[in-house]
Amino acid sequence: MAIEVVEKTFSVLEFMARHGQPLPLGELAAGVGLPKPTLYRILRTLRNLGYVEQREVGEYALTERLVSLGRNDRFHHLTQLARPLMQRLHAEFDETVNLGLLEGTYTLYADVIETTQALRWIVKPGVRDPFHTTALGRAIAAGLPEERRSRLVAKADLAHPVARRIKTRAALQRILEETRRRGWAVEEEETVTGVACLAFSLQPWGEPLAAISVSMPINRYNERRRAALVAAFAELRAKAPAAAVTA
Image: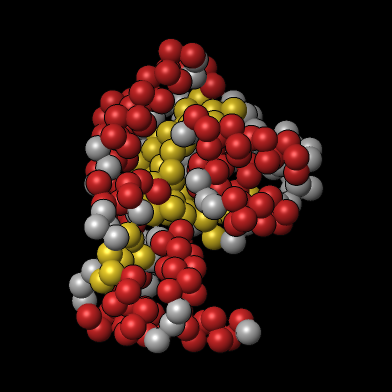
């Protein structure tokens, strides 16, 4: 059964790639020979993964995320998308700005802009942390559909040495639900003593498996600083492309 679903999914992707333009659900269903409910479930999954976007008029189109799979640099599109947002945050706050994406149950750091200040904590690209221990991972997980979020929670390694603050899956679920409600994630001295981090998902830009965070030493982190970061996140989200927001 699982193989059949994969075959159907690739038939949809291939049909969309051949046409090279947004297509309505009915035309897609006729083209690939699938019932609309089945096709809708496949498209919804691909949309949640960031490979398909749904336009305002109800048409579906492939995203650059799918194209980037064939490139040597798998982060090419993602870093091109995120860099202007990262640079703006870096210019405003002069703190370390990180780009991360979800890989399994881990957060993978894909890009970093370092603070110019002497006191800093830097994570190099390529490093991975359990998703639930980072603001990046929490921001991503909180924005996922409930079923997938629940699967992540069930797989979370709560015995990992870094995960010293979260003792139960119920507690992790509450953290993600709160993150989802307010629209940003926070992690204060949980991964590294003396370091705080705030993050927001790139879902409004069509990248539901990626997020941007700003990290800083705890002595530069206070209520006023956090409020300023949250306001900056909200301003960036408000300027996200309309087509991506509806996806």
